[in-house]
Length: 126
Image (cartoon, rainbow, N blue to C red; front, side, top):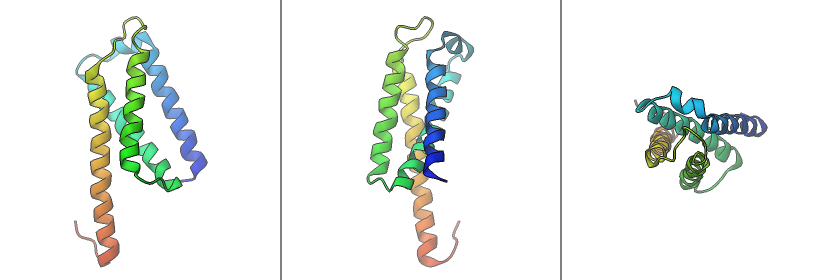
C-alpha cells in the first residue's frame, strides 16, 4: 500500500477514535465488559495500521516503538476523558489497549517467522 494512503488511513482512524472518546453519549452506549472488547479491537487495528506505516518507511525497532506509540495514545485518550461528563479515566481501558497491541505484535512476529521460514526453505508448512 502506498505511504500516502497509509498516512491518510492512520489520520482518519485516529480522528475517528478521538471523536468517539470525547463524545459523552458513546460511553453510555457501550457497557462493561463490551467497552474493553472495543478498546482491544481498536488498539489491535491501530497497531496494524501503524505497523504497516513503519514497514513502509523501514523503521527499526518497530515492535517496541509500536508498543510505546499505542500506549502513549491510550494514556492521552484516557486523560482527555477526565473532564468530559459521563466519561472516566480507566486503567482497565489502557490495559485492554495494551492487550490489543501485544496480541497484534505476537501475531505479526509469528506470521513473520512463518513467512521467513517459507522464504528460506521454499516450502509452505502450516
